[in-house]
Structure formats: structure tokens, C-alpha cells
Amino acid sequence: MNESIDLRQLRYFLAVSEELNFSRAALRLHISQPPLSRQIQQLEDQLGVQLFIRSKTGVTLTEAGMAFLPEVKQTLLQVEKAIEVARATRGIDSGKFVVGYTTVFERSAIPDVIEDLHQRYPGWQFLTRGHYSINLVREVKNGTMDAAFIGLHTETQDLAVEKIIDDPLVVAMPSTHRLAQKRSISFKDLCDEPIFWFHRRLNPGFYDHCQEFFNRIDFRINAIPEPPDHHIMLGLIAEGKGMALVPSSLQRIKRQGVIFRKLKEEPNRLSMGIAIAYVKQNTSPILQMFLELIRKSGSSPR
Image 1 (cartoon, rainbow, N blue to C red):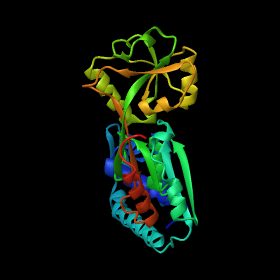
Image 2 (cartoon, one colour; image 1 turned 45 degrees about the vertical axis):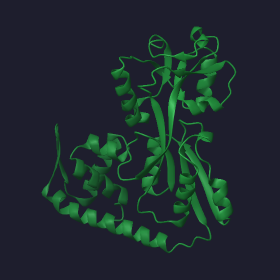
Image 3 (cartoon, rainbow, N blue to C red; image 1 turned 90 degrees about the vertical axis):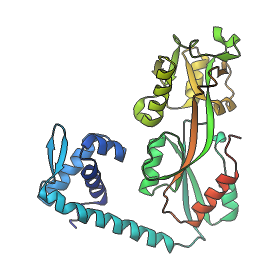
Image 4 (cartoon, helix red, strand yellow; image 1 turned 120 degrees about the vertical axis):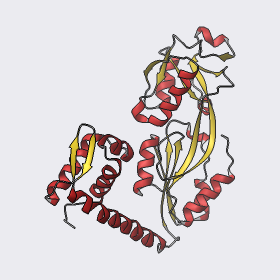
């Protein structure tokens, strides 16, 4: 293989070959379209052949591309096998295990089994990292993370996904707001209220899930940009800058000037689920113990 051709380019080529559309391939790879197009162009330049014929409706493989495709598939399968073999021979006396968690949830709502793992495997280093769900999925698929707690409705492709929490959304509002006198809030009450809401690019799956719910109950959200950190958002709510629809577990954070109220639409409850995602083929005994402990911890927030 040409020294300048890397596995990422081969994976990008495979995605475009199977989707026959750069936009869909970019979405599948969790990247934007421009860098995908640049990598494919660079791959073609390095090979000295054109792999795709581009058109307004999509792409088709050239004769060179069709010949290249089965070889790429075989190469990537061989690489995956080599990784599995290497990992299988790794001892369990020491190593590093990385767990990700979505920053949408208050972390205390997620089962914490790291201390138990420390006791069982004292020679291992256990690391945790917080990020948006789509970034966590990418890291698990790339092998830089062993498992991750992600929000449901996130596109996970071929990862194994096990639901562990279903957390209904509640309204976070300023304690001085006129609606604070109510014990529960309807979506009609919120029609004209500014509500902190996330951009679709941060989690297209969950965004679309919520939008379908809003359309079903004829609710048009008056969205304002949501800060990346929920502590900052609660501070803005306390200042009267807006409201938010948040997981009920976020009520664990006590913020002066902020109160939480249930939503009335119980038959049409909007909730946020969380699941553990991991690679199905990963037979690591540490991962298996981690999953066993998570399953024993129960399926509801503590």
C-alpha cells in the first residue's frame, strides 16, 4: 500500500461506495462533507485513478473504483481481525479502560461502577470522558473508547446498544416566573416562552424525535441557543433569560433561582433515554465485567 494512504481514507471510500452519495456517507461517518470530499480526492490523486463519477444526483463507481472496492473490503476486514487477535492476547493484569458519558445528563444519574472496577482490577487505569453522544459513538467505533453512555435516538450504526435509563423531561424555569405557581406545566403554557434548545447537528436523531413529538401535539418551540454546559444554562435561567426542557435527573443540581415543574402531557410523555454503547465484537473481560455491573445496577436513575 502507498505509504501516504491510510485506513481512514479506505473507510471513507467504502462509505461513499456503499451510500453512493457524499452527504449520506458523511452523515454515516459523523463528519461534514467537505473533509470527506477532500480525502476521497486525495486518495484518487495518490492512486492516480478516478474512483467515482460525480453528478448532481449522487456518485457512481468507475471501473477502477469497482475493482478497488472488494480489495478495500478485504483489507479492512483483515485489519479488524488483526486488532481482535492483538487484543485477545492482551493480559488482564494491567491496561487502560475508557468510558464516555453524554454531557446532556447530570452524571450522577448514570450508574457509577468505576470504583467497583478499580477494586476488581487494581492494575488497570479507568478513565472517563464527557462529550456529545455523536462524538462518543465515533470514539467507540474508532476504538479510542471502550464503551459510552449515550442519549437514545443517536445514530449508532452497528454498535451494540442497551437502554438503561428512561428519564422524562421536565421544565426548568426561573423561580420568579408567573408559571412557577403551577404544580405542572402544559406545552400550551410554553407556547410563547423562550426555551433553551440544542442545534440539530449536535444530535440529529434525538432532535428529530423531539420535533416529531412537537408536531404531534401541535407545539411550536420558541427556541433560543442552548449553552454547551447545563450549569451555565441553569445560571441563565435563574437570571430570567429563558426556560429549558431537561431530564428530570437534572433536578439533582440545586441552583438558587431555578425551579423544576413536571409536564402535564402524561399520555404523550416526552422523555430522554440513555443507553450503553459498545462494539459487539469486543470480547474484553473488562468490558464484560463493566456491562455486568451496569446491568445489575438497575434500569432507572438513582
